[in-house]
Length: 500
Ligand code: HEM
Image 1: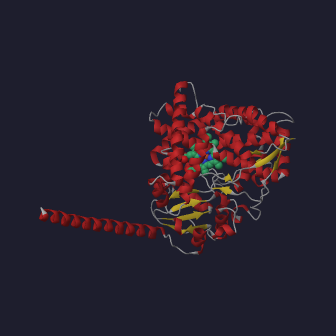
Image 2: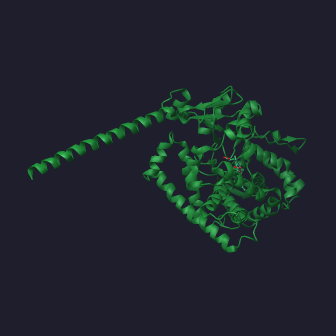
Image 3: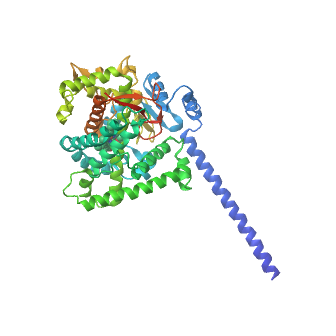
């Protein structure tokens, strides 16, 4: 018995020993793999730019990361820089942009790293896929977003939202000292309603301030913000470990996405109950072909993301700029009075198209404040950009519309000034080369909702400028942005409104 016990103890010690050896070996190998991975990422690169990025010393001189990038890019002779610690080549060179978005489109897809970052939120939605999944959604969406449907359907939706909700809301606070309004929030509610109506045929009534902000919109905002924050971590390992352990921001993101899933599926259910055949909205069109509920959910979310925050962002910076440039406001009013008639309301899409100065002012505003400040692709095979920059396979390549709007070689010495006239020739709006101005992207993946966006931005801005005077309450010279997939003023756009 004693022998058996000592044999048992001995064997146990033996096993524990080998078990310990095994654990240590696994740890050593994991550390080794991590080291190789970190070395690949060049996490400890101490070039001036990487050092400033990692230590955040850039923030001593610049309010926003995009302003620092714009500064570096405008100083760079090739208009291209490298952030080694992020494995990111950033360019503001129009020839490079054309090469990436058109000439070598197939070599610069969105790629796996991007779709992983946004995968939990966007799934297989159009923003997050390449290849056949992308081609299918693009074809379906193009049918819905073509010019005819924009004219007949979008103008109607936008005018309804303006006349029955936006103007009554602004009138209700006009002239009241206590009536401070955050216009950024108002625009987000406006574009959420418009996009839901246009894309799904449903009205969440977010702009009726008496109702609480829809749970869908709140969860949507949070998921968009937290997903964007993933892209800012030095290594994806950071958010992946947090996700694995369900910690902090990843725990919040999971909760927001769960809420979005429930609400998106509810949108699909309601749409199905209303019957899809008689309706021509985007979702009905997809529902006629797609049966997979999760795929439909992904499509719903991507289109909301595409059309909601971008328009709200464009409107926020446009109204901010107009408040700072009253002479531009006066020119918009004068043009509208001439074309539409004094005290007359906008009647048609055709009238909107005749407002060349307004169109120029909108383009100029987005030149300086593009709603999507930068956009990244991943290089599939080693390549050489037109400016001579070598790009290694697997590198993230980013083009930067925000920086491009601030480059003298592209826009001239007055590039920092807000001057709608630069878009006019003999009083007519004259578009620029889209690779110089990739605000709506360009090439094969150009924005499909550009016309719809322009209808919304121009109609809303016009209705505000003609009826109200907007007084800004924040005194900053340049906006401060919060992290997110689209440019968002941190602290919103608080204003006081007066009737004209
Ligand atoms: C001022 C407003 C807008 C701006 C600045 C804008 C800008 C952009 C940009 C930069 C992209 C490329 C994104 C990428 O591939 O990573 C894009 C794609 C897209 N946009 Fe817009 N957008 C706006 C409004 C809209 C609206 C209102 C809609 C829908 C009604 C829309 C629908 C889309 C779609 C479907 C795509 C995907 C195109 C594709 O991948 O082939 N956008 N947009």
